[in-house]
Length: 453
Image (spheres, rainbow, N blue to C red):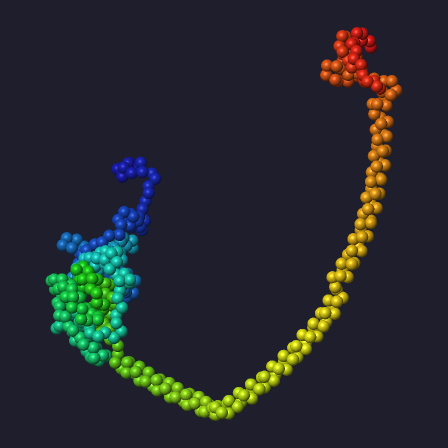
């Protein structure tokens, strides 16, 4: 027996792994034990596949790891991943089973410097929103035609030139006041906030425009400072922001009463277009002229009709007198006819009344009363006779069965003298007891001496 056979003989039931099984189970262990993590590093060996998937390596001073970011995720990137760029990635730990290589699946990625700024931006935005600085109820209406516009921006930047150009083109009659401030650099936010406080004290503008040209997140960071947000919230004048480009959003945009995508868009937002107003005035003038002409024609037509219907007062009085005479005649005939109708009605009612005089009714009722009296007297006599005869019959029947008739035949009624009870049985009395005997005529008292059955 060889050494190898002796060594492995006890292991009869062997759990033999395939390479695929090993790689898949290792991947399951990795994904189960390690959560989704944030990782920071420098991009190297970056390449994009035909379908659009992005493959690169993240490295630091000592180590590196392979990464994959699929097309549906990397399409949302706000920057182009390049070698040497330091990034912050939100990743899932994974193992590519086909090659057995350890890798990270990137779900989200941002530049490392901007990542910290984004987190600070999100934290401040959430806190100010919770305090109500972004609530729509605090937003003020921007005037449709402001009397004076205030520009809070750098006097040397491209934004002020763009705004002035748009204002001069759209509505040059509105005066503009430029409040120069630094829109980038240290303490820029404090300077802008201080300017808003001075503007609110002067209160010489109807609307304010806070503007700046495009730039990176660091360049626009002054507009994400809390001190500026609170100064804008306290300002009593409506504020319109035009900061950066259309995709740029700052804390100042959320606090402002209205946001425009760019400085030029802000200028267009706060001013009406002169050409539109001129066209509107022309249309209103034309409509007014048509309305006046139509009204004059209508009044002229009504005047013509009135002149045709106009009658001389003497003729009108004669017509009214004639109408009065006609009405008088018609009224007289109507009264006569009505009186005749009333007379006929009275005659008919008198005839009906004579047929229904109270005297005839009284006589008729008197005859009925006399007849009823006679019938009542006869009924009473008959009823009394019948009752008397019935009473006599009842008396004879009572006398026939009464005790007096029994006493007439020589019988007596014996009662106990003590309590007056009738003695019906000899067992109810005792010798020596006194009893009373009622006879036909009178009664007598006796003493019981002998009781026989």
